[in-house]
Image 1 (cartoon, rainbow, N blue to C red):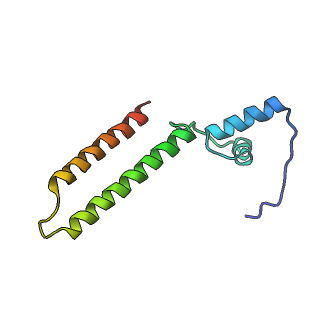
Image 2 (spheres, one colour):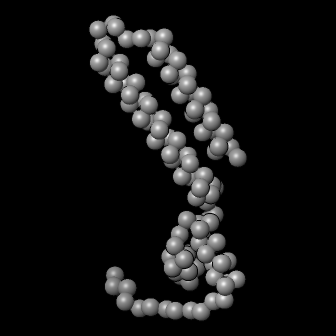
Image 3 (tube, rainbow, N blue to C red):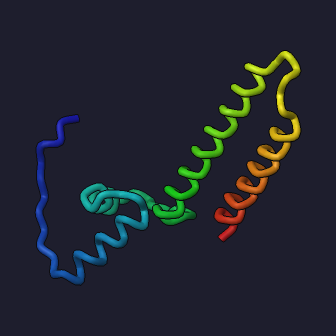
Length: 107
């Protein structure tokens, strides 16, 4: 669909700040937020702030990398030479990290 129509509006500093804050709350740009409101979309407030979402995504990515490293280690030491005590310790640390992520999500 060709979106060649444009609408401009003027706001004072307070109105603009409120609009910007509202858009950020929903994780949208100001323009997209205004468009959704104008077209009557039903916006739902996200369960977590943008900052919290980024923090959880980062931590889950880190845990995924750790899991891949463990899998690679086990696959390259399939002759029985793996350090099973070290692997157990790493898995326990990962379990604690997943617990920390869960705590973040409970806030």
